[in-house]
Image 1 (cartoon, rainbow, N blue to C red):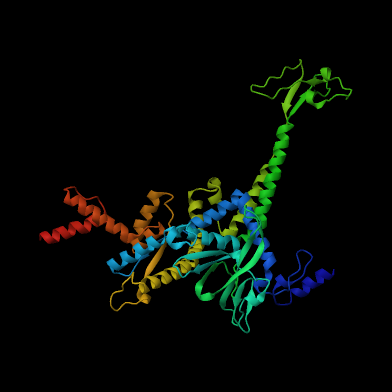
Image 2: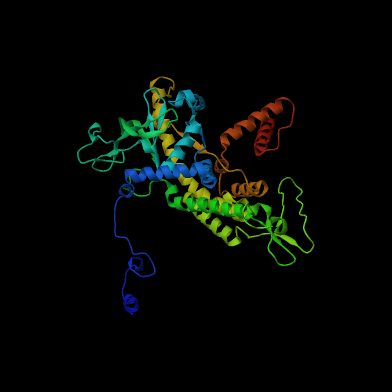
Length: 477
């Protein structure tokens, strides 16, 4: 009765019903903290450790991470200064520096693999740190190594500032440095026994890449966090269902005698049971095929069928897995190609591509900072000479993300051509969507056509040929 009166009273009031306490749902929460306060250092370590363990043992979670990396962390570098010689020089230097021995402190990974690892660490751990070293190389610091050391006296904290999970910020919340710890190793197998303080690095030598959704947030949080429990539930339920299926397979044969008495396999009896196994049992050998059952007249044998896992169970597991994949914005049809048709697949891809582009831009900002740093060092060392009147701030470049091949080449090529002819897009944009560089394609076509014409072979039929033919006609006139 009291609840009914409250609902009637509520009908004549204004406000948000989401903050009302009702017996139907959990009471509203009245705790306001910054995001770093929601995930303290110990809790952060637990989240990172659990996520890493899930990726080691559950293929669906590892698939989600790999698919995310395929769309967000594959790039190739293009210099866009407009000076051909300068562009070639910068691109050659970037290709040389991308060699593992030139860019990675450990000398194990080239820059393309480092880029993928940086995005992977940010996705799994929440954030990752890149150190710009004096020798021109970079060092990647995984997120769990940046932590508050036991002895704060070793870390300089500015007046009014604080240290948050290893990140030192000033009074305004701006990053001024990080405390890097190293893992204590117990044995030759690399088992860790905790962390000890290694060194403090000022902000001018570090770059941070991570996932943030609040303005006051200092440390990133893994997008896997919202889907972690769903992934774990699917993994555990799959294991339980497999165990049940195995049990059904082991105990799956039933005998019925013509007189209605129960029959048992010989192995069901042991010595001293008092049963006459010769009269009430069958000797069944499940060795090599074919299986032969020598039975008495009127007796029957049938396989026990449990219909496990049920259709309802499979649908529920698919729904739970779909929810878990949404933590990385991945549609279910990426995981199960038979889940939808061509139209549904393309619609899902277009929606996912929008979210992937946002994540690409976040990573491109990090790549741009590294590129600017390398250009500055090459100019200072005399490896790059700028034309008169140009400064480093006038240089332009682009990290072109990898595109996605056509799902239906004929339909999509026709649609792209129509959009270009209608002036709704450009050739450059369409090439970027495929991960190609339009300028490189045009130069290659021009070189091919020039070589073919010099050998007396008609050039291939391309839009570029029309321009060449018109030019030839104009010259002839």
